[in-house]
Image (cartoon, rainbow, N blue to C red; front, side):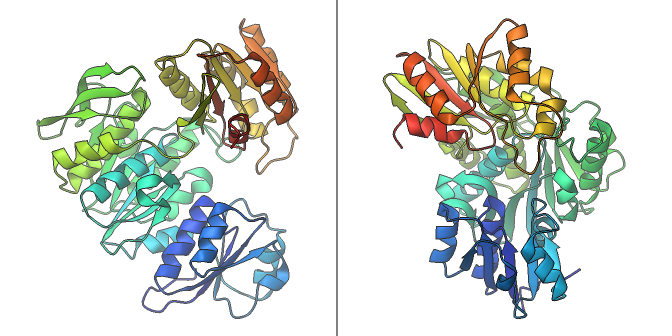
Length: 459
């Protein structure tokens, strides 16, 4: 495998450089003196940012973009083996790395790399940890799966030993990492186009935990069923967090404000405690904050600093993000695309002042829709009225005989009001005619459903 060297920077080319994670890694290398270039399908805010930093971006992926002056080509799991740039790199015998392999090598350059894993909550928890380190003036390098306003984007290049990044389990990407501190937020069925079943997923998280060195730390959710199976025999130190007393880090005296934001007493592993008031809603975000607090405690960050940072954290883009209000209708956007995430978001929304709760959901991939069809129907039924957009195919093609109309039938069978429209224009027109003052509208999904709320708001 090709090895990058921060003491001898080389020329690195990114296929799909405009992606959230890829753009972040590109900036880290460019700041370290590497010659960085890459390609993407079209212009975006991230490609504009890259070009402003002097990084060459080609629009359109063509074989002639790959030249002999490139030392290594980086690609993601979304890049197919018939991609012209992938083929060109191999024909020129240019070494290739996956995004995960590159991220793992970057981790080696830092004394204290922190990797945040889990089926849900990675971006929010990574952002919370980042906010705390920034508050503590620890000058971290950050690679986040969303935009964190206090970091000025999804990436920040610091000069300290601290590096914080998300660790995704899909295609076993996180098994290429070298963390000193690792977080496991939760383990559930997902990405069943890659994993066989839950047992296969748990096996991968077990292997991830085993990556930690003897002087490393694992922070794991004590609410994971039989989590002891994941930690059994590990040489590193293990700390737990959870919503129930008995974990090393847990809450008590839980209350919610008028928008569903929790405030609570946070108990630490040493028996001490402090008050935490969050500005993000829901029990799931309280759990995320416990994991972030555990990491902060390991890094010897003071409790008052940690609590203030958690209070100042107002979320990241597309995580229960307030988009605006029009005609008295509150518009929220959320990235949730798994039944557990949808349940958490809609339960949080139920605490938010509203008359009717509308949810516009765009299913993400045919395989996930088919695997969780009944679970999706049950979760979405927490909204008063549901509107479905077509399935966002992402990396897949429709070979499973599943559609949004199939999901609509499941929801209607549960006795809930559900509509399906094949175009965003039809959805927007329906909402403009039917949403009333005092209603709340959530656009939800991992695709481009965010555009619906933005169009209604005139953005």
